Image (cartoon, rainbow, N blue to C red):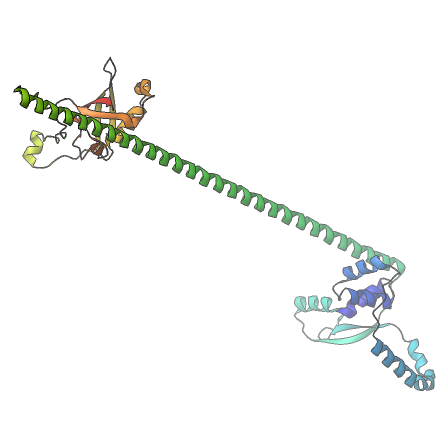
Length: 346
C-alpha cells in the first residue's frame, strides 16, 4: 500500500524524498493526507529527528565501503541509467496487467480469476498536463470529502442538540408534574387537617353543652327534692336513625335490595326553608354530603361557614347525627334509597 502511495505522489511531480517524508508523517494513511502535509510545509519541511547511534554506525559503514565503491564505480554506473521501474500484478489466466492491487481485485471479482504474479514494468513519467489533471482531481475529491464530512458533522450536531433539548423539556415537564402532584397532596392534607380540627372543636362544644345540660338537670332534680316539686321532663336524647324498612315484596322474598346511591332532600336553615336535592353514592359519608352541599350553587349564601360546621338531623323520629356517625357511610346509617334531612350549624 505504501509503495503505491509513493508512486502516485512521484507521478504527481513530488520529489521522492519529500513524498516519503509526507507518507511517513501521515502514517501512510492516504494520498489526501500526504497532500495536506505537503501543502502545509511546502519547501520548509520540518527537520527529521536524528538518531545518533544510527548515524555513527552509518558513517562508519560508509567509510568502510568507500574502497569497494571506488573499485566498483565503473561497474555500478550503468545502474544509474536504469529506467524507472515499478511493480504491478499480471493475471496468469488472461495475461492482463494491472498497476495496483485495487485494479487486480476488481478484475478478480468480475472475471473470477485468482492467479496473479508480481511483475516489474517501466513506469512512464506523466506529462505536466497529466500531472496537473491528476492533482486537480485528487484535490477535488479531497474537497468533496471535506464538504461531506462537515455536512455530516452539522447533521450530527443538530441531532444531538435536538436530543438534548427534548431531554431538557421532558425533565422540565416531569418536574412540573411532580410539583403539581405535591401541591395537590399538600392542599388535600390541609383540607383534611382543617376538617379534623373543626370536627374536634365541634365535639368539644357538644361535650361542653352536654355537661352543662347534665349539671342543670342535677340542679333541678336536687331543687325538686327540696321543694317537693316534680322535676321537668328529660330532654330528648339523640337516637340512631332507623334502618330502612323492607317493602312488602322484599319481606315476602326474604331478601334486601341493594342500592348504589342515595337521594337526599336537604332543608336549608334559611327563613324560606329552601330545599336542595343531592344524590350521593352509597359508600360516601355525611361528611361528603356536607361538602357536596357546600359546593351546591343554591347554597352560596352560606359560603362564610365551613362545611365541617354543617349538621344533619331527621324530623321524625327525631335524630341528630353525631360526629362519629358523620364519618360512616350512608349505607351503614340506613339512609338508602332516599331520606329528608334538616340542615343546621354547630
